[in-house]
Amino acid sequence: MLGTLDCSPGRLEKARRPTKPPSIGGRAVRIELEIEVITTDFDRVRVVNLPERTDRRAEMIREFKALGVWGDPKIDFHPATRATIATPWRSKGEHGCFLSHLAVLEEAAKAGDSVLLLEDDCDFTLPARRDVPPVDVLWGGYSLEERHIEGAHCMGFSAEAAKRLVPYLRALLHHPSPAPVDGAYILFCRDNPDLKVLACSPMLAVQRPSTSDIAGPSTVGRSSLLQPIVTLGRGVKRALKRRINISGQGQQAFDQLVSRLKS
Image 1 (cartoon, rainbow, N blue to C red):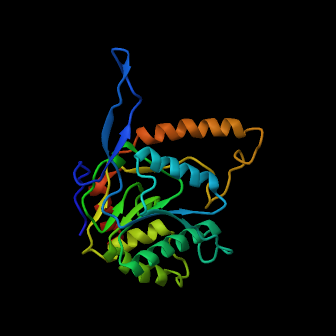
Image 2: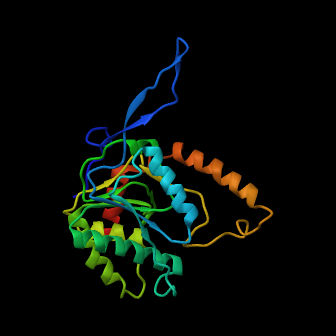
Image 3: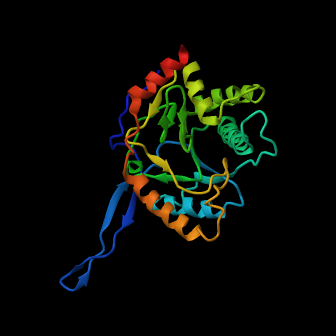
């Protein structure tokens, strides 16, 4: 069953985050604000990260600290798989990404846990401080196309969804032309219509502009002379992506895509 979107505040844990102390009558006054954060009812939060990408690990720690949840024992990094061959996927990165997601889901399914699965280029938006209703599959960030979906950087799965997904993804390992992991997830939703699915609008996360572990660096990104300009441009783009065009196409558009895939 495809769910109805509701990203209103409600059940999230609240983290106390201090602000800069203002001055009243010459005396510093400390004020603490209660802020709702994305540590929902998921039993575990896992960030897929290649061990050598310490830059991305550091960025994700900063993201969690900004939400006030770093140090929560349910949050951990999962060492991503670096595939040695592309076949049968289009690239080694796409292959490794699929295997990494599968490994996280296998661990969650074995433990009987729900899991929030994040990729290490995930930037949280302000709506990430809000609550979302309990669902089986949560798409926190995405872009819908005519017959496929792009984006698996912020995915949530119930224990039941994780248990079903493991054999579903394993079967695709032997497919002659398997879908990338985001495509596999949308096909899973199509084939499991009894599960409740939520495509968040506004989106909870966007992908951080950075060198892709799947596609690799661009020609411009490899140039040391242009690196300062590239870094500055990514910083500006990152700030804008968090605030502009984060509404997502929404649940109705998502449901229509699933319907098209059934035909």
